[in-house]
Length: 166
Image (cartoon, rainbow, N blue to C red; front, side):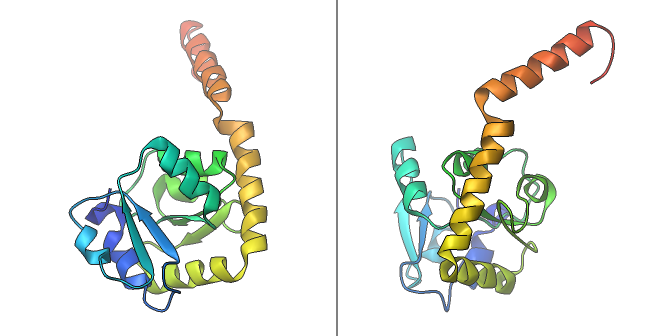
């Protein structure tokens, strides 16, 4: 969703200086006009899950410049499952879910210059980003698969039923 809390304006301000077409944006929303016409940006519009998977397979990183506190963003988990590192705001759960320099890159929220530097670094270091993507996939397998989530939920239920806290 291209809206204020998702950091669309921050992304728009970070794009000048990046190579033409280097950022492909999926989705739509009220702030879409901020990105329209920027040379570095290609607007894809809303995508079906298959289209999202195809974009993730070809990307160097997923960029999540949110300026709000996110819960557990589905896009981030999908990126990890796809061995795609994430460039995200160092804010709320994003800072907990992305390990800076290991599974992706963290930048200060609402800082277009920092976001631009991270995206430029990612484009200049595709092999290092691929390593981070592999680490993200390993983290996904260890923590975020549906089987792992079910096991954690069942353990929590068992703890509650037994009268103790997890």
